[in-house]
Length: 272
Image (cartoon, rainbow, N blue to C red; front, side):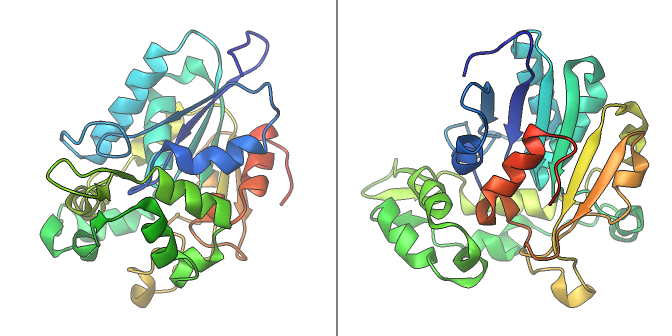
């Protein structure tokens, strides 16, 4: 849809390792005249791969996108790392947002940031740096991921979108490579504790809906990317926060149940 003065534009920010087209199924479940902007974050999709790949920079990039959009109100929706970036943008440009929907955002318990401090893993030591990077086609990628681990819980059309738009032509030879290079993804994960944005919560005065997936239960789950990294008390930190716990879903809830996520985007008062 086109931007409308009487209706907020939906701004979508994806998770680490993904791209704007993973939202296609969610967008399809919105009203057909809804104006939607889904961005490819730096290092992802069709955006360039230039650093710095810091979480603070991702927030600044979303602010730059907000500044480039005509002066309509925005419903800011961010999944995982995208939720962290969207809170930074709403704190920097509070007058531009109508409300936020944070989909299992990587905004962790403040004690965890203190505990970890600035100790960050080298990207090449992070397991995501070892991901298979070369593919003959997006279909090969789809066949490899279908029914594998948490991917098996995704709706097939979303997995297809992820694979179809998740590769680009190999600049150095035949076939395709990941649109988010494994070392880029690993660099982002390895800096996930670099920016505790607790100092920004008070600046976000619009309604905030926090959708949380199945919890991480102790250290053994820390590398289980299907579990929720979200601080359970996050919603309470906002002036108008609402916590929605969805233990039947994994961290990848827009991929599992895009219709449910769309319901919360359509209405701040949606029920699970």
